[in-house]
Image (tube, rainbow, N blue to C red):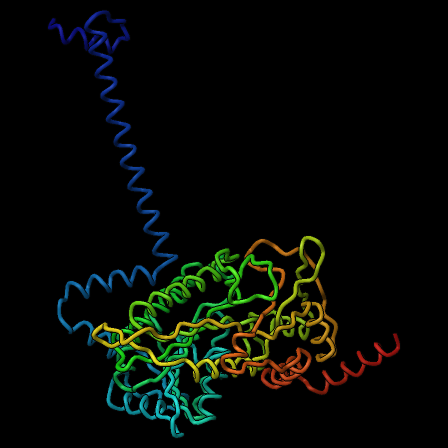
Length: 479
């Protein structure tokens, strides 16, 4: 029998080998174990990779399709793909069927944009308003149009809250002659065509992903809208528009984050954001500084403090509380760890609109050119737009109860660490000095106007509400 056959037979029978035979068997076993481990690790890696690809596809399909779009554009190396992309873009310029039929980028489209952008008064502004179908955007667009300025709106009508409310605002704007395009601020080609069609003197950039708590569920949307979207607007304004427009954009009082000095001043530190939303707005202020410094863009940031009023956002507390009170559903109120009520510097929409228009009127000119050269430094400003008088949220609820004639079913909990802050309080002295900003609407008057709109818009039974209010007043008088 051959020696190697003996080794095999012994191994098969479990015979203990000594000397070189044992060493040989250890090497063979070790090699087989290593090979098996390598195959197992390889298969596990492939499985994990496939799982990650599936998860990425499910959660971020827009980013994935965007990557494929970029790859195909690079491979094309010509203008065919870009032209096809532009021609297929959806564009609604109003509520009428004729406006909706206007093709994106065509002659009729450009004519409609120029019509809407043209001022109706001597020395009037021509303003591109992003987020025009939003709460603040719609009110500002109406105010600009009412005083004779040219206005073109842009909005992507996303579903963060009920798009039908945004469409209703769009119809209201269309009735006043304001065209609102159904498009996204990250569409650079569309923005370039807009600036080719009209010589905008100003951009009021209000498009953003709002909400503090929602950022914990959908963080990528905040980066896409509040960071990438801002860069997209500034890029086109700096490098494509001729002449460059002045930019006024919406920052937020949330940038003050964990600041405890009050009232909040523009000189206070803003490097401790309490939410991702606040962090993206703070990033926006840093980005604005860079574009002002490099390209000479005139940029003004506005830090809004809890804006409320008719045509408001359903995700805001006053709006959602009103709906819950009418429906008899519970509402959640926050208290701090030491038992104090949360307080907010509620600011009525008309006061905020006056601040926005004041910022536009005093923005100053940009100093850059398409060639990249600056004629000199351009204005870079930031202002608080608040009401200067914080109010406990419980008082806001009490006013709503009185106006709706119905008691709220309150649930009081300790404020969670999810981005909310215990109070906000604006110092508006800089805005008052530079463009005469003076908020003049007390909370009870502003909420009364909101409730009047709320009842009308949602077609609530006014007789039933009036009866409930009389009953509530009688009970209050008796007590």
